Amino acid sequence: MIVRPRAIAAAVLADAAGIVLFAALGRASHDEGSAVAGTLEVAAPFLIGAAAGWAVARGGRAPVALTTGVAAWAGALTAGMALRGLVFDRGTAPSFVVVAAIVLGVLLLGWRLAVRVVERRRGAARV
Image 1: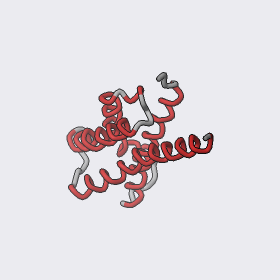
Image 2: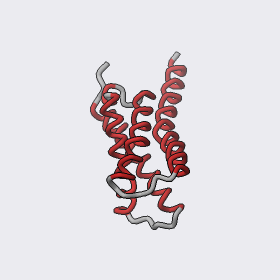
Image 3: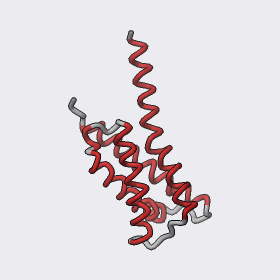
């Protein structure tokens, strides 16, 4: 199966948007403001981690697959937290790790599940 470059780009953008949304919501909940640069700084380690997950999973072969989503989520969480603590010099409190795991999981897997539901409904409507 050949995956169109547009499908890959759309999936990458959806994942990146989810991660930036996670960072923006976190900043808003801590009254850190909505500055774009600050939000991107918070999102950066998780974006890098998700990219690593995509690379490991070869996400370009199946960008909408749940396995790609799980890899992006795992990379964002594990590598993202490591980078956040070691490179970006920000906290990784256990409660934050739990919240990040849940929110990133919902955002990175949720849109993929929604796509699956829509595709199945379209397939059922054709029969």
